Length: 278
Ligand code: PDD
Image (tube, rainbow, N blue to C red; front, side, top):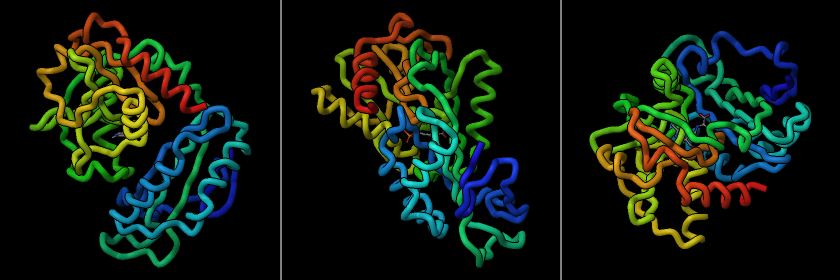
């Protein structure tokens, strides 16, 4: 495949990143995942705006290509013959001696890669997933999309070891988010419930879009923490992310939501979102 690295398109096997890159030695990096469907990006401006916020929060200089990122994203898809798939975009603070506080004097490292994937055909999207709950042991700046993903990788591997496909995190106030998604519940009255934004969770671009589409369709919405005890009595539950789209949750820690069937509001929002994407 062809990747974009620091201003040039290059074959992945020929791409060179310094061993002294602080993304590697310190995990000092931020990222975005944006999808395209039939060549059209989904909410690219929101993803790029969040990239800017993450960079500013970490004190990482924007890459010199910042103004051209949307056209580079498009060109990278084309060079890889991808029409439906994802673009992964990572920015690290660059290269410096192995010293915690030193500021690199060179440019921030920008890596972009493209991967084909048919999100609407995924069995998770079509048939739903089973998840487990785990205490959220991550740091308290989950609003920044950093590349420090060890807790998420461990939580997802632990899920697989327990024969479910993902982990949802909770803190003392309730569910925070999924390991790579935001969480929604539909209560007995058909109200959509999701956690309000704070430093405790990532401001998902998909979350924001779903809220917008749901509002437009006349659903009632409550932004408040979801209690773990509420999940057993929820009418429906789903997770959202760029790649999950709207993925139904069928069971949580072995307990079925409704009858383990995909609910009508989840189906309606899936349809609205798929129409929005094209
Ligand atoms: N993850 N919360 C976390 C912790 C995430 O990692 C993600 C996305 C989301 C949803 O954000 P969005 O709707 O903007 O994709 C919420 C991406 C997809 C990933 O790491 O692959």
